[in-house]
Length: 252
Image (cartoon, rainbow, N blue to C red; front, side):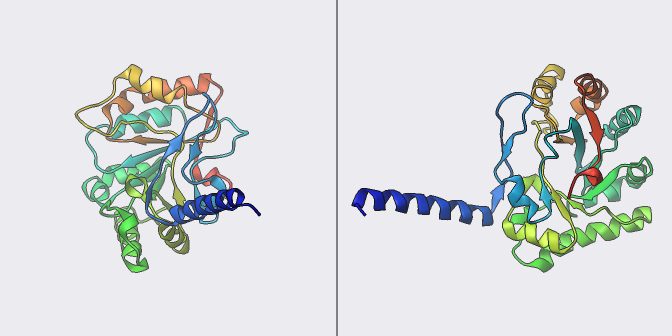
């Protein structure tokens, strides 16, 4: 075996070990897009995530869209979003935090009453990848579960979205141990900055060409742009042949 071959073999093994280690370390969820209309790649594969009962995209053979919203607070845009969803008979998932539930009990009840899934975005919205012990991780989720039960009389759905998309392999394992399905996303855009909201056309330029079968779409309910365009956006998705599904319809 010559030295050049040995050196190349060492490089390959090192790359494999580095890739494996990275999967277990702290990270931010990210996407890589290819051709328009095709599913993007994530910085973890669907097969890898499946081991932890986690998901970022639905089946590639069905033109189904799964609408999800992160709801950190309410600034007047949620009612219009809910009205648009109701008009299109679309069940969405809303990932809420403690502040949202505490400050908006009526809206929280409306989410559930109108058939939407209410998921866990943690109580305080911290960087969960910094939590290595199960008890700290668990407290962030169970505190929200308890508040939601007190507010609505119902159990919180067992869907979890890491704040800011920050996670680690131990987080994925902990969420699974607590009975949660971790839900990332396969389409999003910069819609959360209150004072720098994208224009209508900017939003469509991001949300239309990149839509794909099985898309789990992340939008923020605080976005005025989203509230203004959602009815038209859903109409245009329907015109493209898409239907709307809910997270509880995704394959396990």
